[in-house]
Length: 204
Image 1 (cartoon, rainbow, N blue to C red):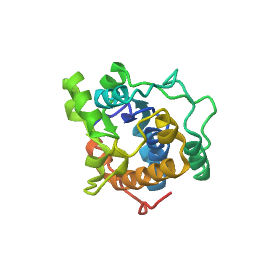
Image 2: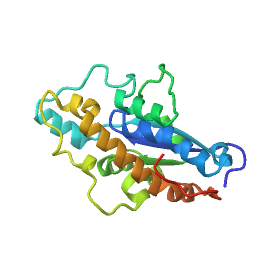
Image 3: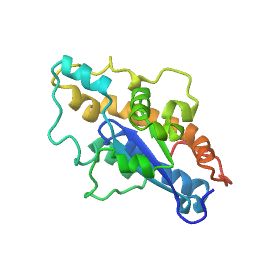
């Protein structure tokens, strides 16, 4: 186990505006709620990574990417959700693309999609042991609709739908939070951090 520097946990989704952003800000809150000492042991960040499978589907459907795709504010519904939980994120926060340096420096990476894990392992085979999906970490064995590329409309409204549609994004946020709560002890265990929970976690 590390003795000086904190472990580095990285959450990964597509655009780094909803799911991974929630992980970046909610996970530290979960740690504080469980045991304040945990926040000194684990540093949390997030990034976006577009798997080739999604690129191919969008290209086939002639769906273009927003320009710029990264370096954007988080989705407004995400910001409002975090604010309701007492997390006022700086207006300077911007989404970022996962870099090779982030992969190398991470102690654990949690991807929103299985396709992301598979492609990242193919690109960075030495990182295989530290890349997991949120499904794996939460031990979720049911349907996760945000893994289903068939749901969003494959047309020019795709990005607005997956990042701004109130009904869809609210559901994504809710299930992401639920799976994060279930994954919480497993993530700490994978990092080798003692939880020493003071009280049970519930939806924040």
